[in-house]
Image (cartoon, rainbow, N blue to C red; front, side, top):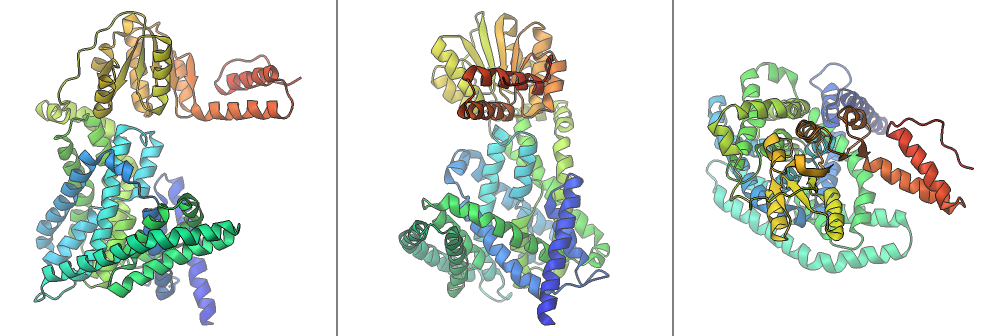
Length: 574
């Protein structure tokens, strides 16, 4: 019967997690909220079925290991270094500021300095899952704001590793030497790290290579899982947390030539056990405690959504980036999630964090994650509000040293956005000797382009003042390669106002943008997903024996249908 209860608990937990995640996606909020609510439903604090909390908690430990192992596998130092000038100091200030505000405000709620510090550290860590999804849905993942926010998130993930290593030292009694405990914890972590960095690159690649040569994917997956669990649990021999051990294991595996395959194979396991981790977190929430402490909850929510956003925006006042970038990064990071739970869970286990503070943190995380989609929708109203503040707006819109004055002739092409898409067009125009002007919002990139001899206008392409500097009335074509649909629409509208007859070519993110751009008078629209599918279809037809001209004609007809052009009949092949 005990075995049956074990299976019942897992089955019901996963079933409710699926239902909660499904409903969350229908409501347009991250699935994490659904998983947490599923945990609340089967917790001992709510009516109905009580799951075996100990069983789920033990399985959740595996979820912790796979979560941190995944962070190590996907850790990309180059991504961080590309934005290190903003992400590293910004994250340090954000973490320190959030912790300081929480400790100061915690005095009003009878929090000791240790509890206030740990609570503040947990509140400062944003969910990378929620952040990435928000950026992807708005086409910002490859833009300036996306790279800044991702870099910021990487620093916070690394900070989580440090927090988990130092937490045991904070569990010392009031009369203990906390600094000595911290030094000892850092020393143990350094010894473990040294052993892994010396022995790991010699043993693990050799082992994975030998397993890969056997040609058995099953054995390869078993080897990767054994490495993750083995290194994570061996870390405890030195008093280091399993989370830190799992992270180091992921970093070591990522440096092997099999790292990408290992990451792909571990993802299903990570997702399944991570769901149980979120359910176990929700099972610790006591709704009754929240009803008795609404002021504390309101304070924590204000720190996560309000204080963090203000600190991020204020930090950007010291860097030469558009205010829109600051607002986008603030919207993406003004929440907390999976790694906050890791810190809070460990602190609760070590009795640094009380059940009361843990309950409030968990409720605040649900509120902040659910609020995040609304935060993105408030970007434009927030920008308009700041534009009306005068001096404050000028501080946030710092540009740094001006770029050289642009000299405009006639018959040039204007390219809005010079990422991977716009760059290809620029290279072609260079090769053909066609004069062109680039509008780029990323100031460091704009400076590099100027140094390379390009003609560049720095600024937000959505602003009329920026577009006017390109002298569109003398241009022969406007090519729009912006990743953000709102900026694209505003830029096209401003271009149409300045030059109603100007030919415009636009890169659209998806098919939903096509009819809107058609109404704005854009004749040529390119949807990368469509174009890739059409090229694959054309090549498939040629490969099975159709003439290249026939395949091209068929693909052109299909393209017209998808882009909304009138066609006399359905396309067909002879």
